[in-house]
Length: 80
Image (tube, rainbow, N blue to C red; front, side, top):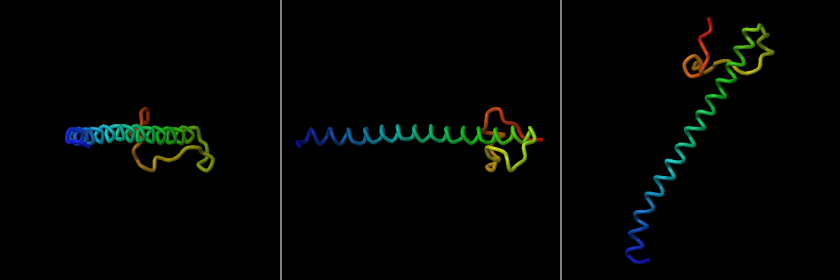
């Protein structure tokens, strides 16, 4: 490698690294959104069955064990 190639590599490597990290960060954010939506779907399913009177041992979904559904899940409201 001559000096010009080393300089170009010295500039390109950090730029490539930053771009790769930015793309990875977007994937992480999208994955977190998917996890939250799945959590919300399962909590909504559990709550809907509770409202219909399905016995707790026969319900599908999950309880809001994180306590975030009222704030984080679209369409959810606190239980009375």
